[in-house]
Amino acid sequence: MATRAIDEAALWERLSQSRRVPLEPDWLGEAYSPGLSSALCSAISEQLGMLGPRGWPVIEALIRRHGNRPDLVHAAGLCHQAPARDWLLSQLREKDSDAECPDLPLLEALSCWGAELTLTELERILEAAPQATRLAGLELLRFKAHQLNAHTLLQLCAPALADWRDPVTIAAIRLLQRRDEPCISDALAGLCRTGSDAAAAAALKALGCMATPRSQELLGTLVVELSRPQRRDLAMRQLQQQFRNR
Image (cartoon, rainbow, N blue to C red; front, top):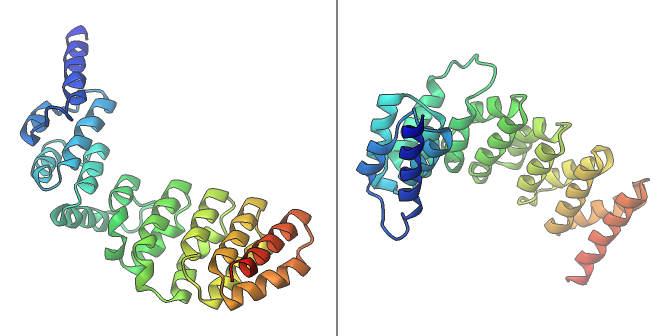
């Protein structure tokens, strides 16, 4: 145990000097071992991922040798290489489609490649129950949204908008507020009426950011309809802000 501690201390020291003395991918590959602490494995994998095209061949070799360890999957996503993307997608699609929940490390590694996923794949991810999985799905959807019409986007976001956990609902609201279609404004206005206080506040601010004729009309309606003073006051502030910015 003492020898391992000394070895790990030496590796940490070498990693800490990487800005002054760049690390070679082959050296990192030789240093990596599943017997190291999880923190050190993650640090080595991250260094490999940051090496981009030079790091991917070593990451790929380590995956073949040690399997789909979460830190290596993360490194594959971090390197932003097309072969790594293809490998990650193949892993996601090879998983049993009847599994209760998609593999979270794979989803997180694929985050910037959300545009490559099919609607069926995104729907399955966003319907999964765990909070972390839905948040990962929304991040994937963020890179797919520009390919979708407003109604399809709303349909995919529906489980997140109905989620009882505020971080999920708020993440969906922030994704939707980038679009200015009336149907999205209507959906956000619905959350102002029926959502939690945190979700309603996020939806009211989103309507204020959209600054379209429909969002202004809805804010005016909400000022009259909302019974909770805090929500009504926020709706009024958002509406007044839009008129001041004209």
